[in-house]
Amino acid sequence: MKLDATDKKLLNLLQSDSKRTNKQLASLLNLSVTAVYERIKKLEKDGTIKQYVALVDKNKVDKSFLVICHVRLSQHSKEYVTYFEKEVLKLEEVVECFHVSGDYDYILKIYVKDMESYREFMISKLTALKHIGSTHSIFTIGEVKNATALPV
Amino acid sequence: MKLDATDKKLLNLLQSDSKRTNKQLASLLNLSVTAVYERIKKLEKDGTIKQYVALVDKNKVDKSFLVICHVRLSQHSKEYVTYFEKEVLKLEEVVECFHVSGDYDYILKIYVKDMESYREFMISKLTALKHIGSTHSIFTIGEVKNATALPV
DNA sequence: ATTTCATGCTGAAAAATTTTCTATTTCCGT
DNA sequence: ACGGAAATAGAAAATTTTTCAGCATGAAAT
Image (cartoon, rainbow over all chains, first blue to last red; front, side, top):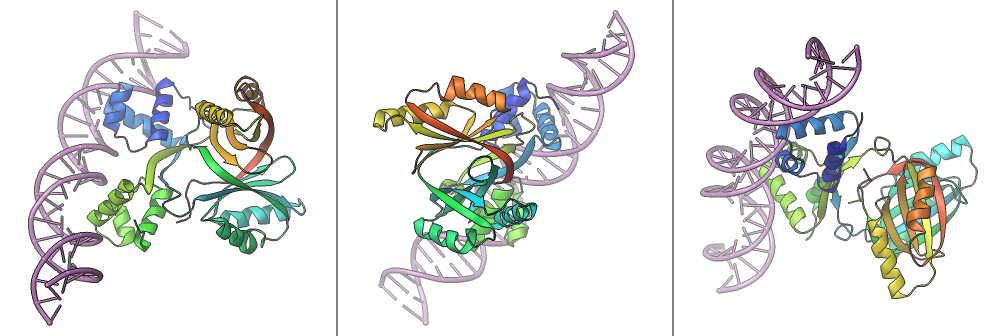
């Protein structure tokens, strides 16, 4: 499961545009179509490539308002942690959720339409969860960078 | 540019797996292949679908360590802001960067190999930028959710 | 009520791509 | 230098994407 320079170039190409044909990739990598095909299959099989997805413009689907929310649980028992993590997975507005070190336990990235929707989300969904100790919301003024590609 | 129920289903399908064939999509949506094709082309043309990408497993590319870093600039002049935003775009470890309200000016999501790499990144790249006032790093203990799909 | 126009759909044909197959080349360890 | 596994190339087969012509639906105009 070692990545050579060609694999890395290939991953970068696919991370930036997965719709390129094997022919295009072959010409960019100075390889044959089959060689590209085999390399991609291998990367898919060994799990290096997890998934192919379409990225949607948040403005076009009325989800322009991005909030980073820090959450602290009231206790840190296994039961509370498990419950929170299970429930947060179900909240479609929460696109990311990380368990973190520091003052707060979790950091959430939340997409909603506007401040009013966020208020509604907080009241009826997030703080409705059991064992939420406290939350701290940070509102985004601007998106400088929002990539999905990891450095390879 | 209005999305009907079929468009929304289609977007959800493509957000979860963009490699499905039009035939598969057609059968899931009870449409003909051409109807699916035309709808996708329209969504691409009007920008609702921004991009198609491959998602890579962070562990397989040795980027298992995720840090959320809060950054404050020393001043908020247009010049400083512009400079910072331009430079941060160039840092491949920084996958996301948002300009935010509150105590800090920016929140960064940073993928590196380990703590040592992070130290190196901080010293020689991030805090090497001009006009950085202060930073506060939060380390992630666990990834509960890390999606790319917006609620549609 | 009828016409007209635009929009979206279907099914089939054409074009392009993916996938398979066979053979050859390259590379690494012995 | 040699043997064997892995990677590559090119062509054929299978599948998919894309184009095309025609049909239905619905809204706006007469």
